Length: 288
Length: 78
Image (tube, rainbow over the protein chains, first blue to last red):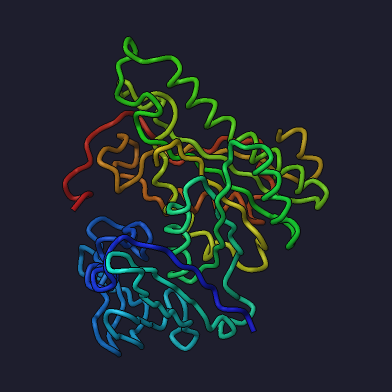
C-alpha cells in the first residue's frame, strides 16, 4: 500500500477564517494556471456540503469537475474525493484538518491517501522541494499535494555549498535523482528592476548575478556529481526573458518567481516510471 | 557542463521563460496572447522525461515568439 502524503502549513489567521478562505474563497488562492483550462477568468468552486462538487468553471462557462466533497465540518475538517484527469472510480481522498494554534493562527494539515487505487500509475514522481524560505516551499508543496502530487519540503540555501551537497547526498540515499530543477525568484528591487541605470548601485547587480548564477551552478554541480555514476539524469535551469524585453530598467535577471506555480504540474507530467525522484530548489533573495 | 557530463548520460538544458499570464505585463509575442505557467511547466517536464533524451546543452525559450512588452489586455486579467 502506498503511504498517504502528508504536509502541513501555518497561517496567521483564526481557524474559522482559514476554513472560510480555503473553502468559500478557494478561487482567491488556487493558482489559476493550475487548472484544467488554465485560462483567464477561470473560477474554482467548492460547494459547501457533503456531496457538493469541486470544480472549475471557465470564462466561457465550461465546467471541469475535480472531485466531490465527503466531509464538510466547519471550521475544523474538510474532505473530498479527487479524480481530476482520472476516472471517478479511481478517485483518491484528500483530508484537511484546521487545527487552532492559539486564537490567531491555524495549522492546516493535509493528507492525501488512496493511491493504491491508481495501481501502477501511482502518485507520479517524488518531488523534493527546497528553498531558503520555508513558507514558500510549503505553499508550493500544498498545491502539489492537494492536486494529487507527492512533494516533501526542506529548507536549504542553494547558495551554500555544504548545504546543497549535504541535502542532495541525503536525497540520493533514498534512490537515484532523475531530474533536478533550479528556479530563481527575486523581488524586483533586488535585481535592479525599475532603477535607472545612472542610479543603479553596481553592487545590486553583482549581488544578484552572484545569487542567480551561483545557485544554479551549485545545484547543477552537485546534481551532476550524483547523476553521473547512475548514468542518467536531467538538469534544467531556468531564467527569464526579461533582459531582452525592450522595457527600460528591467535588467537581465529575475521575474520568474511565478514559475514556482509550474512545479505543481510535474507529478502529473511524469509518470511513476519516468522519474523516481525530482529535486527542485528555489533561490529567492531576502526578503521573499 | 553538457559536454563534460553528457558522456555519463547526464543532460543539462536551460529554459528561458517569458512572463506568464497572471502577471500585469506580458511580452508582445507572435502568438498574441500571454504564455501560461502550465506551458512553461510542460517544457520543463518534457526536458526531464524520457521523451527528450536527445536534447542536451540547449537553451529553449518558452515565450510564444517574444518581440517586446505590452500591457495585458483586460480580458486576460479578469
